Length: 150
Image (cartoon, rainbow, N blue to C red; front, top):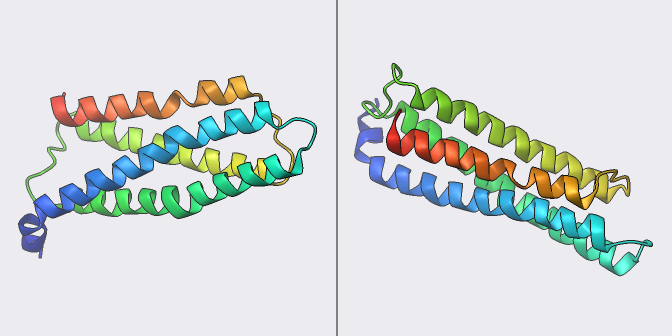
């Protein structure tokens, strides 16, 4: 049953990498939008509020959500491909935990979008700047785990 996975391995891996790149782009950009939204939109400027809300919603729904789903689908297919993962090593567990953390961060960003949309954001631009570092740290863990295979 898994022979087809082995024969499609290069394609699945390529699709996984493209999906991850798309997801990461959104994970880097959405918190930055939140920084600008929190800091620049003061006094209830309706046009600016609408613009930020539209950009945030479209980025999350049209790019980030599909990219996250595709990342998970292609990643799980890679995990199911025979001979790819050595479960006795630490790296697949580090990667898995980091991907779960990245998914949590995605969901946290989605919840913050709802806060902005409802006009009840309580966080400062500085807090979003700090949170903007989370995907970078997780990305470094994932890349080093997968490439170095510690």
